[in-house]
Structure formats: C-alpha cells, structure tokens
Length: 297
Image (cartoon, rainbow, N blue to C red; front, side):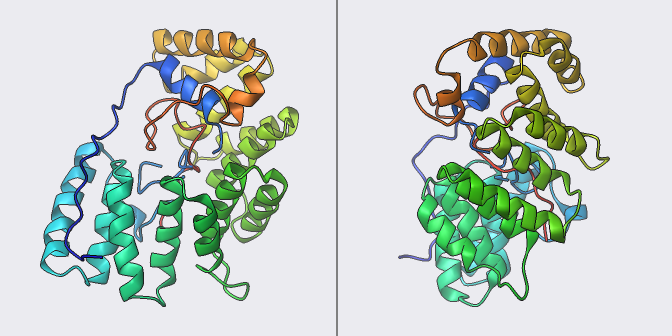
C-alpha cells in the first residue's frame, strides 16, 4: 500500500444537532464507542492520544490539528508521531477510512508499538471490522502490563459483537485498574442496558454521572436508561443540563415514541432501522455506536 497521504472521496457525515435524530441514533445503534472516545471529543468510543492537557476540544481545533500533522505526515509517512496524531485528528473528524489507512501503514512500520496497535484496533472498530478489531486490541497490551483503555475498548467491541457477558467482564477488569473511571462506567452501564438489566445500568450510570470528570455524553447515556424505564420527567430534567428546554423536550418526545415500539429492544441492539450516523456524536448521540470518551494515555 502506498504510504502517501490517503484521501477519501466519501463526504463527511452531516453533524445535525436535532435532538430527535440524536436519540434515534442512540436507540438504533446502542452498541456503545465513543460514544466514547475520540481524541478530546469522545471513543468509541477510547481516544488515541497522549496528553489530555494538549488535546484539541472543538471541531475547528481538530481541523487545525489535522492540517498540522498532515504536512508532517506528507513529508515523512514513516514518522511515527506524525502518523499517530494525524490519524487521531482524522478519527476525531469522522474520517475513519483515512485514519485506518494511516494507522495500517504505521503499524507495519512500527510493529512493536502497542500504542499504535491500540489506536489501530479502535479504528478498525470505527470502520465496522469488529472481529479484526477484537484481535488487534487483544495484542495491544499484555496480562503483565494491562491497559484499562484497551480493556474498555475491547468491551465496546464485544458489545457490538453481541457478547455482553464478555464485555461486562472486560469493563470490570478495566475498573480494577482505574476505579470509578466514568468513561468505563458509562460503557459498562450501557452494556447492562443491552442485557436488559436496567436498574443496575441506572445505578452504574448514576455513579458515573456524579463524577466531576463525567461529561455530557455520560449524562446522555443516563437520560436514555431513565427513558427506557419510563421515567421521562427525570430524564428530561437531566437532559436540560446539556440541552436547551426545547431540545430536551424534543429528545424526550422522541424517546417516548421510540420506547413504546414493540421492537425497541431490537433497535437498541442495532437491528432494524439502524441509522447511518456520525461516529463522533453531537448532543445525545453518545449513547450508542462508540465507547465513552477515554482520556489519552
């Protein structure tokens, strides 16, 4: 494969802000995964980065980051750091096919770099190559030197493969390494919801949302679980922390309609009605598709 800077003819997905659409994504693709974590914006959910203090935060920041690292990558595609940070920016802007191409080349050039391998595994998952992602992530750390970020990412892949029991074991192992980490707890709570263990899911998500380190995506996941239990008033109150009253009302109205459908659990599992959605979620798209935003290593 050529090491030249990859280009994509695929248009970037539209990042709509309508609350109803956001919740549709949650219901149609609640497989956890970033919502979690893509750079500073959310994986898959697991972000791929090193210094949280220097992480970009806005879309324009990520665009600037992409252009900066693209120049260095173009100059030397074998530059490990250029490939890593360029791919991180591409992934944060939902340019997943391009990010995968960059990381695939980087992993071939730096085969012993576990951080690159972890980023590659998460990006494989972004591109729907779940079994490959599972294999790569399993090689991105060792039992002697486990990484909670990789364990959480493995959990989100297991959930997407429908193996919720294994996913929950992975989240529990991750929590032993990073107790009370809200991103892990958020993924764990959503996995429990997929297993129809709603009271337990609510407990875990409530604890995650109470953390000072929790962000809007964690609260959005709790909104979804409250709504699935028919507690729409509580869900709307919580939704208003991150949305305008009108947006929150629209979100809850959509949630009411969705959970009343007989196939709502199939929607949760990404069955019929799955919507092609941005992988970096705006408001209330974080409950599905990707793992919770994971702080960089």
